[in-house]
Image (cartoon, rainbow, N blue to C red):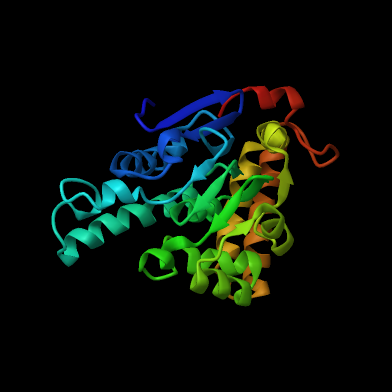
Length: 272
């Protein structure tokens, strides 16, 4: 896939998606908005088992909506007028990215290499794992530009990571937090020096990619259902189904449960 504002490459079973507008700290303009939707709509066909998402440069993972373009009546959100239908249609394109990240079969590791603001924060929240550089900052900045503090899934995803009270504080104040605080409250899984961030993300991705491809997909599926699960029994039923399917797959592959996986480490260097 060729894009104007994104770069995608694979190294064996690991894919790397780079937001590539460093001159705007990887803010989302109208082109990137459509390209991100297109990318995740095709994730099922990607020749990788695990996906790393990061930003170009060392200052911005993604600083949210490109406000310079958005305020231009000839482009961005203002093009087409202020009618509810127009604005709602464009807003749905933003939320579509979040649905795409959660629905794509690959586990997504966000390597947050700088500022994750507004929509950038939501991209990180939608990932399965968040690794941050020591220079990363996080901010639910929607409320700071006069919008509601909850946008692009933040009211749904953030409190599940950091708890209700902390999520309410961050969404209602638009306060910036650094990587150390993000780690302390559970927003970031790990924090690394900037020069180590990508190697650590790749190391984790390879560890995941060495597992059964179907096991990865069904685990992400279970995590998605778990976000909305109504009871422990519901979770147990889903997990029981997945394990039976995977045990059957192991038998078909000629293996069994005596080994951690029927997929040798060398398999992780193969795509898809």
